[in-house]
Image (tube, rainbow, N blue to C red; front, side, top):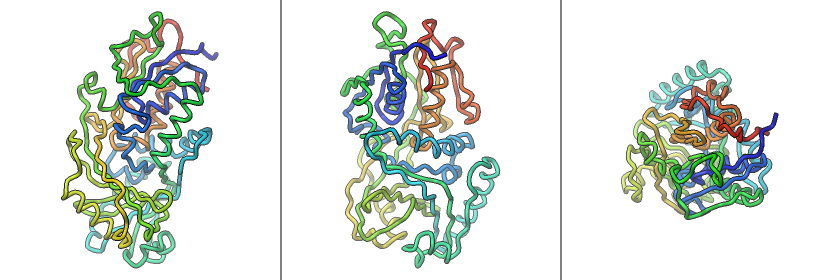
Amino acid sequence: MPLQPSSFAILGAGLMGRLLAVELARQGHRVDIYDAGSPAAEGSAATVAAAMLAPLAESAITEPGVVRMGHHALARWPQLLAPLAEPVFFQQAGTLIVWHRQDAAEAQRLTRQLEANQNTVPELPRLEKLGSEGLAQAEPTLAHRFAQGLYLPGEGQLDNRQLLAALVVEMERLGVRTHWYSPQSPEAFCPGAPGQPDWVLDCRGLGAKGQWSALRGVRGEVVRIHAPDVTLQRPTRLVHPRYPIYIAPKQDHLFVIGATEIESDDLSPASVRSTLELLSAAYAVHPGFAEGRILELATQCRPTLPDNLPAIRQTRPGVLEINGLYRHGFMIAPAMLDVTLEVLNTGQSELSQRFDLALDLAPACVPATSAAPALA
């Protein structure tokens, strides 16, 4: 039976906070969302991300549970985007991996690793090995620079900034009460008490470090380039022993390019060295980047737990903390959303077992008022 409408205070209006606000409001619940910044989400890791949805490609550096979350997201993202009033660029044309001749041994090692990971997560589409003809068909502009490649079918991407803006519009349309420039912590609320929300959902990322001391920042550096002379059909990754890069083509010849991953919570500007390596690698993929225009060179830190895996925990009745999405935010956010909704509705989650997702829940997750949200 559907439960009575509830009230929620969501802390943090990054990707997870906005997704939860929209889904809960759409189900008829009262939602307030608080954020230290503005609707532009300038302090959120989601603003800087490339927003690639690449579970097999990412399997090279993460656990099978995260890969399964990414596979789940490929079907869920179209469902989440369809009701939005504002359009969001979404593409599911696969991922291309290429390498220069001198890096063939590294590419062979990666190929073996991806093939082994496919056996661990068999629901993933099988990778395809491309020779020169196959590569020319998949990505004609790269045919004269690379002789071989890997094609990972079914993988995708979206435009992160379009999505964040569309979620703000949707929150306004659904009556979510937004509190910008209003940082809050869970201690400011007493869920279930008179005049208080029934639930507090803490989605602040690194902003929650005061409550979740194990969190750390992992720095990333990303460049956004407008390159009219470059045409790529899908996200492309370059195998390289020192600086493997990804190039995510968005609309109108806009490219998001990144590679660096530094164990640091330093938010200072990008270094000269990492910038030169990033741009040199991009030029080595396609010389058309030489005449491109650098629109932005951004740095941000991803919220990361000691095992580099996401987690959900309940610290006291009515307070859930969702954190640790690391470098996989857009790839795993739909799975984290669905698990959170299951927990709110039932006090547990079957999905979390499929994803090997760490849940640390109090024995009585649903408050005595039975004011948990009903799933649509």
